[in-house]
Amino acid sequence: MHVELKAFGLDQRLERSVEIAIYRIVQELVSNVLKHAKASELTLGVTRAPGRLSVVVSDNGVGFQTTEAGDGMGLSNVRSRAASLGATVQVDSAPGTGTTVCVECPVVE
Image 1 (tube, rainbow, N blue to C red):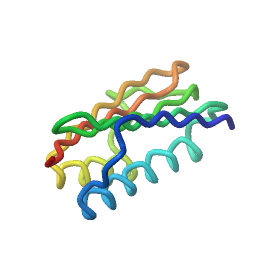
Image 2 (cartoon, rainbow, N blue to C red; image 1 turned 45 degrees about the vertical axis):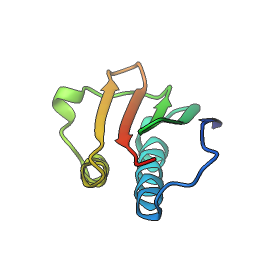
Image 3 (cartoon, one colour; image 1 turned 60 degrees about the horizontal axis):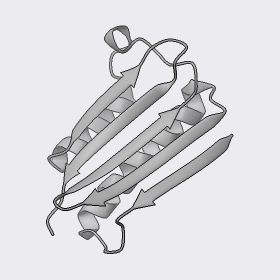
């Protein structure tokens, strides 16, 4: 699998609890790609801008119907961790189109 990392604005550390939660979110999303997507490409983007952190994980895998898939434990864990940070999670996917998950997290400067 080809993996691409795009990181911008990460010249300062986040609060430790935020770093750990974001790490666990990324870990779960990458694990989901490896387990379910049958993807050959994965892109992880992390961008810090004033007051926010954006994490985007996308793949070129099989995708799924978001209205029918329900939340398995993986996405449920992602949503729970994100909620604890005051973050939002958006999942965009459809059969045959791959999946993109965006997590937008407020951060204290």
